[in-house]
Length: 198
Image (cartoon, rainbow, N blue to C red; front, side):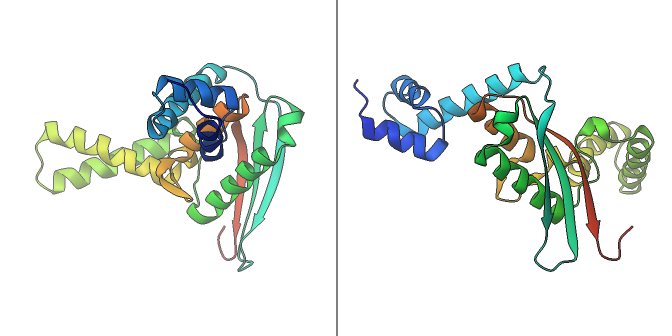
């Protein structure tokens, strides 16, 4: 099956992936645009997994002040090269992540950053709640595990639903960007300020 230049351009417009990757994905998907998008997404996620071990020592610090002037964020987004740090795509991602922090007020970057004592307190509170509902001991553990995922999606930036597309988690958006940009991308740190909060 021959793939037209228009099909390749359309897939590139939708995904931002390189032209050759778009062409190969369309060929693999038999010209089906939806399937080709899935192929590109899977490729991007596998590339992101390979890049996870690399060091990201370059990057930028962005600031975001909400229009009300009552919430502000400083966020460090890292990548491998200064060249990528200066691209519009990278700057846009950094800005979107700063907006995410302003809107959703995460406390930590990832699950691994949650202090053990905070996690133990949360587990204990969830266990007590499940037991108070009259749940049997074997069910309590499963309930706690399920509720912990909800806890992580509230307090961990990477686990939160992305504010611009709630079908995706923030970590998925970063993984897709890594696939497109071709470098490891990681949130270094962030600070959120809100009037009246400590």
